[in-house]
Image (cartoon, rainbow, N blue to C red; front, side, top):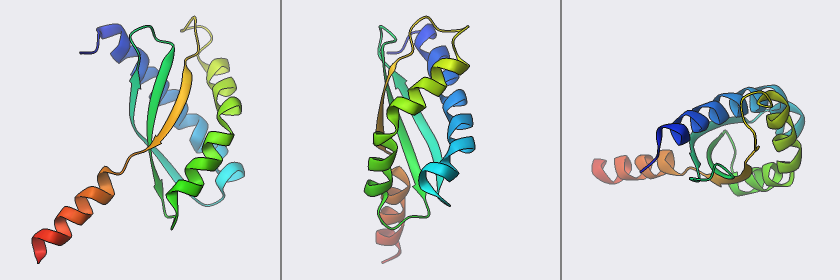
Amino acid sequence: MESTRQKKVSRLIQKELSVIFQQNTQEILGNIMVSLTIVRISPDLADANIFLSIFPVDDPEAALKIIKSNTVMIRKKLGESVRNQLRIVPNLQFHLDDSAAYSEEIERLLKK
């Protein structure tokens, strides 16, 4: 169960990362929209698992690989934006959020 501090830090990181992705996605990925769905932070606030939805792309794994290769730059920009609120900038680990694809598959199976 997440503590209140973890929830606050998760919301802060999600908000700041969404701004960073909105400003820098064009140069990293081109015309692809990246949406942050969930941010989960460890109890010691040192690690953050970020779940992303990537649209419209045929191979989201390739886009995720590009994002992972730019993790250092993203973490640096995050550190610049939260330097007055957090003592430690967490290590970022990006994952694909496949809940939208999963719900589409369930919807398709139910229509059969």
